[in-house]
Image (cartoon, rainbow, N blue to C red; front, side, top):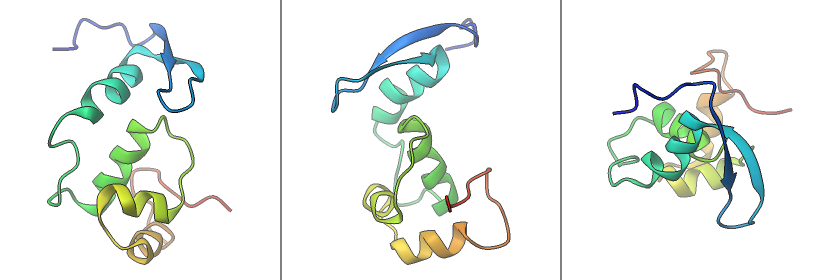
Amino acid sequence: MYTDIDPKTKVDHVDLQTAEVTVLGRIEHILISHCAQQEGYLTPQTSLVNGVFRVFLSNGNAPLTPEEIAQQIGRPERMILRTLSGPRVYKGIRPAH
């Protein structure tokens, strides 16, 4: 469906909560404004790591606390933090220090 989109194309994205306008790549804009809004984007069957990755994708990769992530994926915040702060790096996700 999106194969004809030039990944270098930039668009203005308006955050619906803050009204802040940022420039994003077209693909990232589609992920945030369309894909992340679809039913089934996050389900109870989505793995913890994939769920966290999808939350960051749909959030423009903005920093989030384990509590904020837990609210969106329905997993315990301690489990999220323990998984992502271990020695293995999943999908490039690491806690900020």
